[in-house]
Image 1: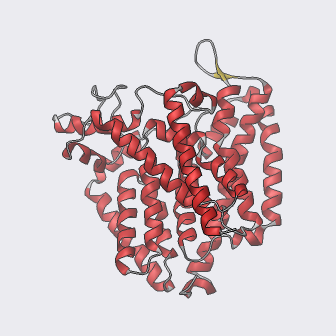
Image 2 (image 1 turned 90 degrees about the vertical axis):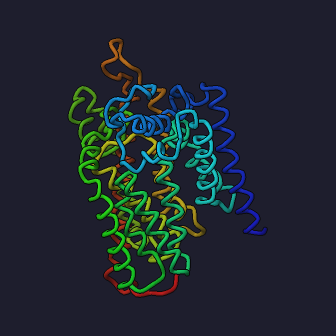
Length: 409
């Protein structure tokens, strides 16, 4: 059977499936709730907050103060580059078409990234793309989707032959970093270009200097937003800090949490050790899949170890998934794919197993709920640790070892 046709077929079905489920959730919010997405009125509320900040600045208000133009009176908590929306004349009323365009672009880019070539790969890709974090990001019109699109295009451009494509790739990474800071971690993705080690390192360093210059121009603002950036201290968040807080501050449920986390960590550790050679060599030295893996894996890992993120930050995992779903992927890739699939569906589990207490001060649930929460934290930790090992292996081989000067692949 024609492989190219199968790829086009499954990619089209995947993108169309995401759009249909998204529209279904907008029409019938109960569908969103079923998969662990809590709808927030109005739709595209995160996008509206950014547009409201741009409007506020045009009116002479301080966008970094609580903003009455926003439905939830939220201050602007992102970099100053987002405020260009006001300069462009965009207002809250434009959210409906901007948000819809962002959702459509996400479906196209996500399906194109995963590009399944078979029914089995198509089902795995659907589990990642048509998942609670992606649907939540689309429903909110969250700007992590903008970062995802920028990183995906940058990864594609960096592997093109013309030198202008490499320049454009660096420019997109610089833009992503100026918008949300954490894409600074993705700069090594520029070294996935097929070129010598010296040139790769030089291009990464040059782009890093450019990013530093841009950040320094608004350093006071970036310091302020770093301090006020949302860090949700809720069990519906994700990150190493949250894992620490959960196990430290909920002693009554610690036994159940450990019962969930322990076996998962043991199993993941055993599989990772068993396939340690595959894990070390998992990421290709150069090429599109390498660039995607580096951009998504590094960005996710930085967010996981440094802060607490809402579920939609998991959209970054779609980038390394392009390599996980590749033909003849090794066992280490299948391990990471399985962990990512489980992690991206944990919001649905929590939505149905945990309930707010009567005074709305805390979440409660049966022992099964807390065991499931322990499993979730172990899966997130195991996936992130395996990503870091694979990324370290790439860094050693590409930047230090014998593969550093390869010009093909």
